[in-house]
Image (cartoon, rainbow, N blue to C red; front, side, top):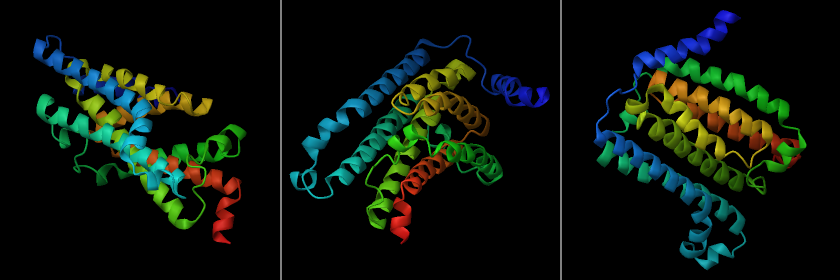
Amino acid sequence: MRRLLRLVTLDQWEALERDYPVDASPTASHRNKVLGLYLLAALVLFSNQFLWKDTWGLWVPETIREGPDRKLFRRMYWSWFISFCYVVPPLVYAKYVLRLGLADLGLSTRGFVKHLWLYGLGLAIVLPLVFLVSDQPHFLKTYPFYKDAARDWVTLLSWEVSYALQFMALEFFFRGFLLFGAVRLLGPWVIPAMVLPYMMIHWSKPELECLGSIIAGVALGVVALRTRAIYAGMIVHIGVAWSMDLLALWHKGKIQELLG
């Protein structure tokens, strides 16, 4: 057990220190670029927290905002808005300031099949935990994230696809942009710098999920840097999110109504 614990903690950190050594003498230009990265990250998180509601009223036609499906479209707009903010500004900054391409940000397909077992292992670890807490009052109060998701199959599928898009964008931002954009300067310490804001966006979630986001953030950060890809986070996040929604709907009897 001690050997296993060391394997998944100290050994991984030492491997990261070898693969991503801290830049002992960075140039002023490099430091400024990384500082700009974190300033942009703060702006993105601010926009996602506050501006999507304002733009919903400004950009979306009144016929949609006041229509019978307004709650669904409002949630889908939230997903699309934050997905845009998570992806487009960081992608532009990475390309034109950091001079990094998609592959440099963890979106290379190289080695994807090789690491499939790792992605499956991640799901095998977290899905049973989701099942164990899925009947708790706080969990059922929080999920599904869109409360009327099980109104019909079209609504459920439309929402869950939009929900998954948001998690793909989130993984690109936290495990792609924030990690690979600053790792040359900070080395492995880029992981705690990423985990702090990642944990903060979970403050409104159930306590166990908020605490779990710290562990998950560290684990997914290590996996992303070791595999040089962000697919583990995407697959695990979407799997967990869908299972949370579906289990909550099942405990509330909504899935049975759809099937019946």
